Image (cartoon, rainbow, N blue to C red; front, side):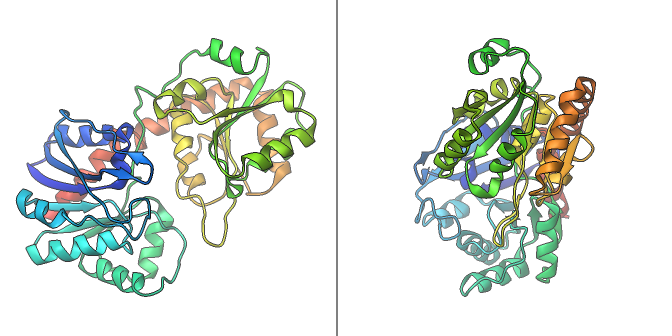
Length: 373
């Protein structure tokens, strides 16, 4: 069923990546008249433009491109006055400069505005960010939190606006699905009888990748590791891999295009996300989890942040940093292929119910309707 016609202006640096635009297509199918503002470029990432899918894309110059909470669009107010939206959805944190400016401009025009928060650690920000956050929490019509803890943080800061828990993006369940990739698996692994443990993401210490290596040492010889991605911790990971004396069973793939990720996920027998909580960060969602689950790959995650809520009953959770518990979870899957299949099926079911782009779009449009009421 389509929503009553709403003209929505969404502002989002994340949407420079066209792979995320499926959400916009789904929102347009629900009858939303959607205009989307993205930067001409975000850091080194040029805008990947798509048009003709029921929404209008506007690429605007951005000041402080690539700097998360400082950036803003100097020509945005002109576009807002031209479009005259019913609602503005600024897809940025409540304490960001761009959120403050948009909410202030929209308030002057009588346009209700929403912000989006990922921050799941209670922090006190220095001025002027503390003042901007207070303003946003006071004058926005509503907020969207990407995880439950982010909502809790806003409530602890006495945010009186309605807060809705909705992830920023879901997955395209048609693209991310179970598919045979025996040739790719053979090219990377070689050993058809191997049990392949995977990690995908940024190579940084807080992702806990070293825990996989430490658990790996105690696993049977048919276990292999595939690491997809890159980052500043790569050299240290390669050093650790060499120290294990098992480099022939540890495979560094490198970064993979988002549209190719389903192929690589489908060579895995399980995916592990062993994130470690830090004083200034903990896992806010773990998008790779729902991508793997959509491909019916069983997942194992640490207890950091939102990971347990994302996995639910569709995988295994271990206390972060607990190597024996991680080893036990992997061995359980290695010894029980039937369990792997069952968890894979449950994972995809969970994604279809909660984490598709269609579901995220429907939940977001429901928030718009509530605001207009």
